[in-house]
Length: 336
Ligand SMILES: C[S@@+](CC[C@H](N)C(=O)[O-])C[C@H]1O[C@@H](n2cnc3c(N)ncnc32)[C@H](O)[C@@H]1O
Image 1: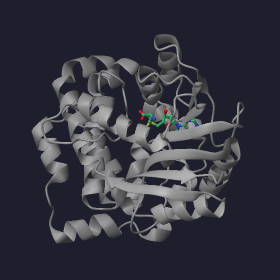
Image 2: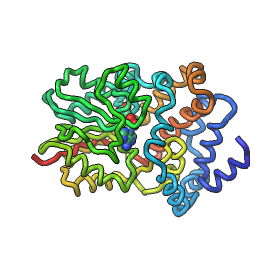
Image 3: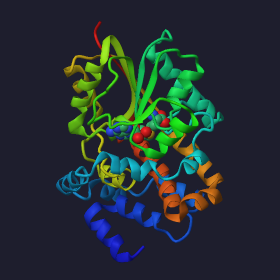
Image 4: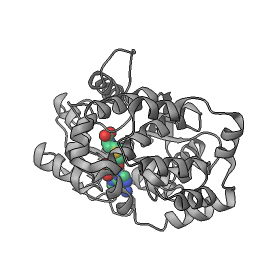
């Protein structure tokens, strides 16, 4: 990467962004051990302070505002429409969940941990078997397939904005999935007994949260449940990590967890469950799988995208390690 770009990245976007962008454009595949160590080992307090306080809030907000001018679909395509075969190299082989799993111990596989997560969510959905369920941001159809495998009889459908995911979920798995923007488009076949989302509310911008929760509320039957897993900010609305996030998810911006809860309550939901989970083991497991499949990954997506994911996983690990964000599972109940 040209040193002039590195310098302008530091000035305009800050240290974290500049270093991440620089490493992504390294002329070789990033070394697995060095790279993980580089991001996750503690840095000097001065460096930490600099990384967290520059650029100042006003510059961050101006940049993020400009990024929010992009269409949702653009950001989704940039991240997800890379190659289905590439994602298959590091996601769990059974369901292809691209969201935080539930590791019960240090030795279990990502396959087992994703099944535990799905079982946890299943318990929150509190199903009898005939409910009509909509999965907002269903990815490669993982949770819908899991529900099918567990014998769910009610109608299952999902929305995604990724064309690659749509192809896989409809053609490979035969699921009822459509390319629908759950923020801007209607939920055509409402009402639903359950509406769930795993790892997609992160893509909803702060100003869209309440309107989305209202739409979910309106689309549920009385007594229906919305079950969501998503991560949200703990401390401050625009940390420098939100600027760095734009490298990986252009146009996405997180908000504080309290804003989610307040918005849900304002539209009439009662929060009946809110638990916090740990994303770090999942990020490490994906990293290790990607490294183990390095040669094939390079053939499929090339050097820059390989290095981008090699950077994305430890940067995200750091984000949770430094307690900037938490991953929650919540149940929002519509009164009967
Ligand atoms: C991190 S993936 C999670 C996929 C899946 N739920 C899982 O657990 O593997 C996020 C998903 O949200 C979808 N998504 C994000 N914003 C969306 C929107 N506005 N409308 C429809 N889908 C959206 C993406 O297309 C993607 O399928």
